[in-house]
Length: 202
Image (cartoon, rainbow, N blue to C red; front, side, top):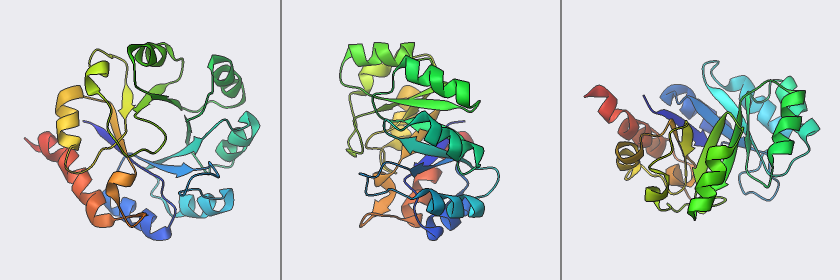
């Protein structure tokens, strides 16, 4: 069963929506340059509202590992999603501080990008077209990846079922594809969830 992650939540109504829809994961963005950025205090308030069976990932770009460890230890997030230039040494250092799942994101444009993703020591890899571009990439590049991965980049209720049938990812990750006017849209989120689950019901 393909898992679902709604990323970039920032409002209490977003949490109310996911508590009803029940994805496996949500994401809080801690990159100040992002329009979906949340302050740690804001994320803590959102996390307190979040259903216990939904895991929260913290999205970071080249953040100080100590800062990430602090958020994990305070239970504001349950796992880490790295979207910068974090290398293997960085991941090793982070593992020395915390024992929580690590997702490393890779922008997929070439076969070399795929090779780097395959070799990552992170618990999961996330394959994307770029930092919040909202566009898909060439899925043919990743058809032979056997390790569990999160598929992101341009997913919508209209194409996610095709993506799952083509690639069989561990999870699908969506942000802008379920938004209206820059905010999460509960109707689109529910439609995305239903499209992912259609084949599960067959």
